[in-house]
Length: 317
Image (cartoon, rainbow, N blue to C red; front, side, top):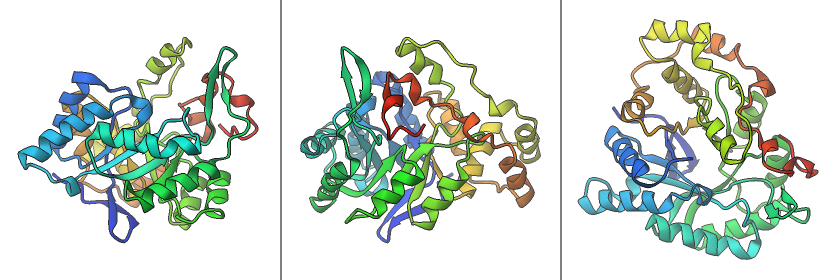
């Protein structure tokens, strides 16, 4: 099975609609999982400087390239600028460091990871009051000019922020990577971005069951996370198509024109998440799935847990 749905970022750059997410994955576990993902057919890999796993990904990719199983142009690679290093003077060095770790000459997509510059001090974690993402964007544009990335985009941007960027850029953002899943569909954001030729990539497309692990790393208590796979509507549609609820959730996003980057290190689930190209949700299925959207109540990734970011006037989560 191969991914047969793509999003056009530019006439000569296309992104496979299903990618392999790597947040919280590292070391030998990621190495084995990424090998499995490439064997299954994933050709879109998502990482970030913040994830501290670019070296592992680079090692695996080099092995596949050296073996002749894949060419560089066969794989779409996304990485992101470190959220606490969003200084105009650090952008070029940040991307160069990522490229060195990934053992690549260029990435296909480079994202501004967060709309705020995150500062950490003895007073806690907070948003830089003097930060303006437009200053950073100009430096990202220079990375396209230099050939270090084919395209550039953003992550965790609201309609308001995407609109401001579109009105003040030389090179348009081609992508906005945001949390999105059946319980948090963000229809207005999707419609706005689509209207302005900004593609959407959904992180946490299966609800991010590992989010409580992240909260624990911050010393925060676990949350009671919603489980869309127990939803009667999702279960009924999965039974109708002889598929898993997770496969229904991913297929729904793809048919909405949204790319998804599910994350798993389990070999069976890696394959299961990819096996979504042999069926189609009909109009009735799609309507029922749209009806279970919980709006903002469905959001899982709570950035308010990250120190005092919520005090910043541009905080919109």
